Image (cartoon, rainbow, N blue to C red; front, side, top):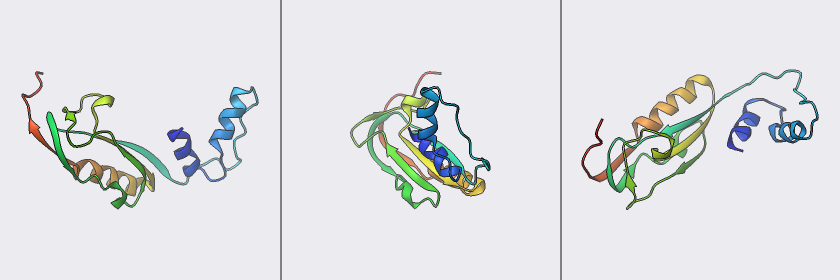
Length: 126
């Protein structure tokens, strides 16, 4: 779903959901003649760098980013968080759409300016 929505936003005139339904029905996929992305889409995984009980977060106002399309916080105050090591341990996902340079700059901001405040626990063993 989300990747198709983002793909549709990057290629003018393309309707990815229609293409998926056609493909599942055995209809050859119709690609627009000028099938060239005009923008870049990126899903950013926003990590926690600490283990513990989440007290608060800073920098989770992702709509401040110029290329912000959508985002979701996966944790809230009181939840247990751990240092991100896999997809299920990230605190938030952010979807960005724009020029390559702007998307890369906003991805860096989303990660660098996101801070978790926790009641710390023992660190993970290596």
